Length: 157
Image (cartoon, rainbow, N blue to C red; front, top):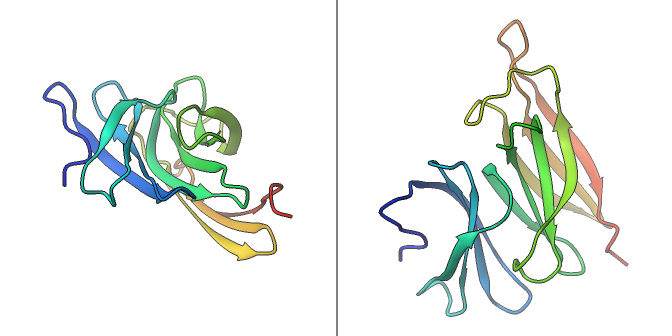
């Protein structure tokens, strides 16, 4: 199945998640404008619809569902005003998104959209704790770090 196709666009990396209502959501990186896009499937991923811009500039996308069903999207922020790994949240199944903040930021980094940074991943540790990992920008010596971040799901119990 094709999730996203458009002759004027170059779609690249994506992540997908199943909502509480058995809908699949895919957040997708678009390489031309460096915008994040979203698509939905209501039939076990046989067909996809609703392809549109999601409202933030993203690459290396990772989706995670919080205890109350809120969707969390971590990504390398491709907005030149922000340097690092940002998170946005959706409380309505992916229809709208709000910037939640940054897991990692380095205002001194050489930030170029498409530059190496990000690659977040998350896993539940139970009891409302989330482990997140990410790749920093390279420093002046050309070396990057892998960082471990412990998050708290405040929607849990």
